[in-house]
Length: 512
Image (cartoon, rainbow, N blue to C red; front, side, top):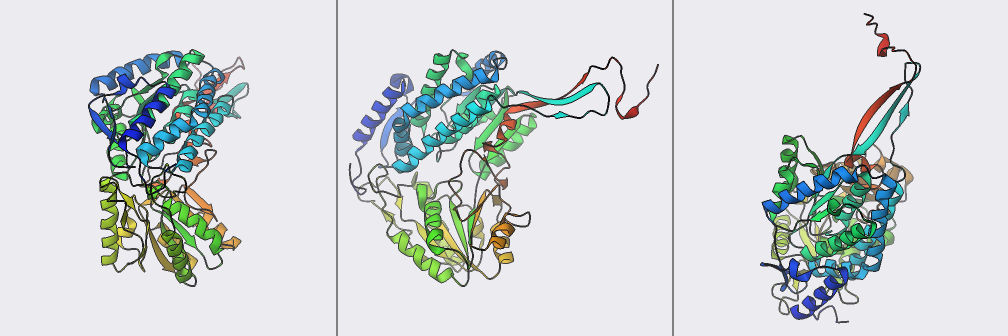
């Protein structure tokens, strides 16, 4: 293996990509096209891909609707067999998919493999779900009647995914949608076409292996305009979109205008409250991974630490020391913990945010610089940064998708909770404390207003068994585990009269 500071050449990355594409069953010649795909590892071109257009999307929707007519009548446990086979193929090709995630996103190897493990886990979850989907039976007020609810396949699901989790979020949607009886059309990020092509090829193979309808899964690679066509098509029953709040502001109203459904996973401005009783060694580990992991490019990345004034100086000093020791460099090299940011614009947003925080009275206590610029002038390796600031200035209330952490002091728990909640986003929050009353208060209805609220663990690293999503400007959607499957189905309330009589509800008498 290379060292973190020795970056692979484009020729080497292309060689790695082609070998993995071949192993996953991707037709490399068909994938190739006129649009250059670059790797954030060295900032250079690795591959070229072909983009679809409006006609491509329309054809995909037509095919998916035809597949839906076949797939919706297949028993759910039989649909589960497709997802089971897909999970088996993911196990077999775990390293190949992880390689693409590192190549196109810049994730370190362990995080890339962790993302593929999420895909495997959601397949396991969905297979179990395929034998459990069901509604309730409720007592009827009328004798000789049964009142119940049933759940049915919804229709075509369009999935628009973001670059930072180029495979896992698609799989959350796809595994659940397929067992619910819905075909899926996937429009991935323009930055991650090889990851999506490899994943789609494995699912296509699973479709063939279990003899499922051919078009229950389709991939459409393209620019933003392709996503807009998918959003606007009335043949798409549900649009599941992951991205920025700005993107959600566009997608939500467009889908609602045609009375479709949308599932939105948008921005996060996640905070950890660190109380005076917290175990600072444990707290340190939780903060450093949540704030610096994936180069700060997770929706659940910790962006704020709200620390009790009695320990804020000690905690800031410890964090600065840990940050100064973080190995930064080639994400595919042994020992690296922080890889590159995805592109120049992301790095520039980080530097502008640091400048804005300084203007608001903050002080940069560590990081913020750029590494490896001489070795790779088109790659952007940022030093994870910490800014100490006494008030939640406007820039702190914004989500900067970067390894930038703000540390703010507080005096009492009411103030800390108010600071945590005083941002537009509501994805993830955590509290580090050894006081049970503080923990319970943070989890209560008067505590953190997020969709994910943790105790003594960071803001990132959710498991697939729980529903994933957030409130406020995060969009309100829920994916993955728990009862998130309901978003992919339609509900019917049924009354069965087996009495031989016809009593009306609420005692109404309508005798003719």
